Length: 293
Length: 293
Image 1 (spheres, each protein chain N blue to C red):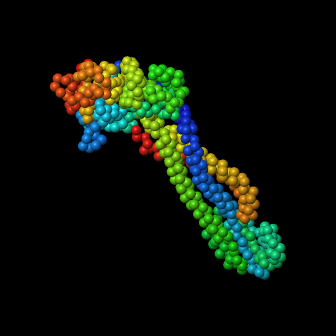
Image 2: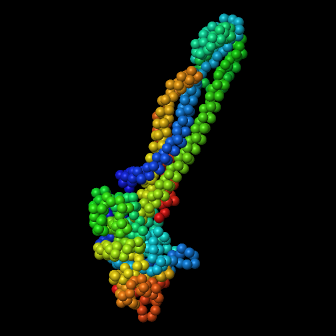
Image 3: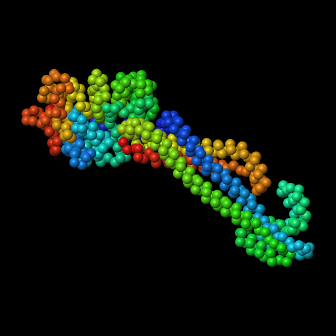
């Protein structure tokens, strides 16, 4: 079948069933919006994890009254470790000033004395170090005389990792459900269109049309539905994101240090192409039983 | 019908006038001991033997349920024979794969009692669809459709919505669609069943004009007033058997009967008897040999 004929017949079908298809596209876009929303959340969580992962840190809290010579020796030891990129010493006053600078705190907390904040050595770790190696290093450093405690922030990373894994799983399940939902909605829409255009199909078959000729326009129509629904969902999400971006940025930056990001271009393309593909598959599958004339 | 070197209608040699192949000398249609069962204990067709020569015009008649429509439906493979063979230009249609059926139908023009036109399409679209299936270029489609519409008396009506036409005009659209591809054989299944007597005669005349150009026509009807006005070969079916296959009602017993058609004894009512010229041509006998003219 010539492409022009195929497109022409599909356009005629879309015109004739415009209302039906508009309802279907609206329903489908809600489903796609769920997937796109989940992807957006995952994108930002991943960005957060990446940022935190890149800035792997360790804090070595010093004992009260630790001798300056011991601290200097400790610093030399730490700087000699291959896992450590940089060592910064924070006195109690520095720690208090840093706390007051980064946190919006009330006057009551600002009145805390510097002694509340223990002096520490802030370690920037080299990137790509395995968590087990960081743990082993922390255990070794904790044995040293001037050291009170060692904080690796592993708990936070573990929790974030778990959150990301759960998020990915949820997005996967959601994508699967939406895929099935899109297949069902497009399949039913096409079935309805086929039922309304049964005469047309019968005429085509009696004139010698092959199954591919009959199926072609319906597949194009299903593809268009999936494509249009995915594009609509992306547009709605973009409008919502742009509207809420300033508020999101303010809270996310304060909480996590990152700015909200929209879906990456490849995700948008995958979403739209995926929608079109599922639409095509849904209509092709739903037509099989109607082609026997 | 070839385009870009590709034969789009594999049985193109069936077309009237194309006599170069040895197959051209074979009967266009032959039924050999054909049985069709829709109920296990009651065959709809039982042992039908018939030969339709190229360029013939045949009436297929008989009471309701005699098997007229089934006979035609077996030819265009809506159903498949349960026993026996149907040879279309020497090919057994029952042995065609489902993928080949569209190519069989491209060599047939099929006209129905209920017209089977797509009401919301224009007249042009209804006729052009038969050519679009053949991948014919739009310019040629326009020319061929205009020619076909002229032949059926609908010249200049291409842009009219088919639903706005009268019953007779809709049937003309169906006939134009059937002839636009210049098929080798036209199967007309009660094409005048929904029309008043005057229109029925018009439509019959139209089929005869088409037949005059060399196309074979198989015209199923139970309307003896229509059959009585013409001198074509008659194939009478009753209870799934071929009762008679001869030319013209005028040579039949009671042909001189001037009573109205609805009170005259019908062909199908006739029972085989000695010396009447009627005989059952079921079983192994070949109706082609029993023809009188």
